[in-house]
Length: 327
Ligand code: NAD
Image (cartoon, rainbow, N blue to C red; front, side):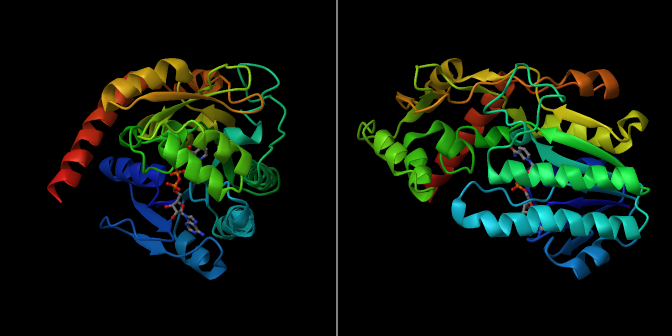
């Protein structure tokens, strides 16, 4: 039996579906129900008793559950769920004699938004600059501790930024809304208390909905990885099953980063929205993370290029808009 935490989330539900399609026995664990029939424990990573129930009879754990937030007000909850929750789960896993534990870490531990060299490889110094990145680094330390001192085989996957293709052109989505659409970005910055950036963005509002092309203070467009959830699923399944994954630390993501100066005009052509360029203070986001190690060691291949994702995103957007018109 494989336990998947975060089984109602973007990556978790896709992993559960992929495992079930292969005939594997899976138990989900999440705060909220997935809405899909099947073995599922509903509870919090903060609840040690629920975790003992969840790990009962389990051979392997894919720990994908986490509370992702960059809002200052969420800091206490994030440490409780992501750091203490991971510690509790590892302890429960160890007591239950689990074979392999795969941990979803993040590129924010380097951090990718301030790389010391490119491409970012697994031996890049670990100096997170967000509480979320720090959560993941502490999680990795606890995973390494168990690998060193216990009997669990562990695998750390440092996830790329990951999205369902259908989210890319959705202004209401968690990541793409603020990343690619001006007004959601204003709302996000207001909620973070970043008044100066919110004012800057508001000064660029042309009175109608628009995309935002993010650039740094010198006008360099942002450039980062956007990996399709389906590629992440393939990497996670390799981490679960491949003998050479045990004890490993791998960057997991697509091959090439996406340059926003190329992406935004293509998005605009699909949405019919204007693009507004905004030069944000600071160095901005500009990185390329190497997935060579997981390709060479486990045979990972990313299949979902940004072009393929955009095709799906456009169809999903049309469906959403048609649905809204009907209501
Ligand atoms: P998601 O937010 O869609 O899914 C996370 C799931 O964890 C949710 O279903 C949520 O309900 C669950 N969860 C939150 N708090 C919980 C708690 N207290 N107890 C139990 N479950 C709880 O995120 P995702 O995109 O599927 O990400 C999966 C993993 O990958 C996470 O660990 C995340 O930190 C990591 N990651 C994601 C990205 C990304 O860009 N999506 C990038 C780097 C790392």
